[in-house]
Length: 354
Image 1 (cartoon, one colour):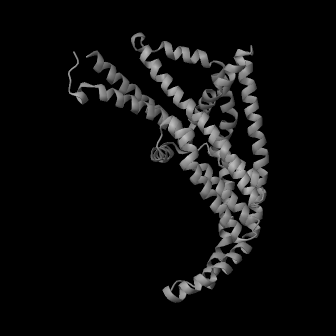
Image 2: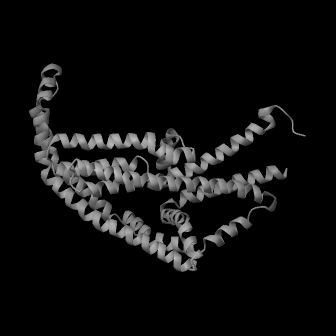
Image 3: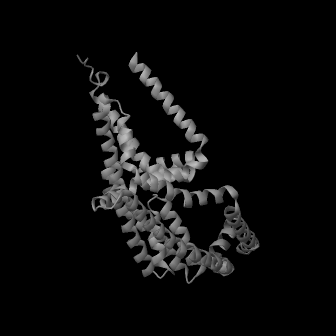
């Protein structure tokens, strides 16, 4: 009976927590990001603490350095992106004209044999809608930037996250000790053991993902520079940096690189080289780099990673994309623990424990 009571209390607690998360979803993003940042930077603050720097000062130093780095990236990236978007918009008619010159023989053959629209008809349709597409894109960006909720979320992320991260970092040992004291005494060794397994898994994931991002920064930057993409080193650096979210970084980098390549259009050969570069590096990363630096250590199968990204993106939006892999790693540890327990249970072995 006590065990049943504990079980139902646990179910009630989990249901209440899910309800609260669902109702407060709109304001939770900076708190989750602050928690992730505190967990990620706690090791660095602990190193400073061992060098006789207080946790408060150490936390401030780490967060200030992080904010300076992010500010420099934003200061460089946003004006460059804006400039390239304007160049892309102004050069789009020439790009479309070149594309139709290249595709005209295929389109004419298709029209003659299959009855599809001719090259001239397709060109007229596309040309007539280019202005509408550009105007719609500009309006979309304007609405996003001026939307009250979106602006509030951005401001809360920029302003609140560092503050939340600072207080969590400063009091991290106290928070961990308080959580530890809440665990029933007879369950404390078991919970600590499994918590350490989860912590080791997350640490291995963070270190592995960091190495993957560094390697991808080098691969993309060198490759895009070699094939002559304007600002190739910067684009490669940003693509590798954003690859901490699997697939999202590569797709975003490919779109940005293609946009800049089209804005500075030289030949279709360079466009094909850009696409080939991202395909080849993506294949190397997916089959060799990530499995050895992340998958083998964390035990996450690529199919499970893709499912986790899509599922958490569906449930929690962008926050879910950011949290998908860490939570998937935790779930993976819990599932392995449950499976180990199951294989030693009397239900599996058919033996009754005395």
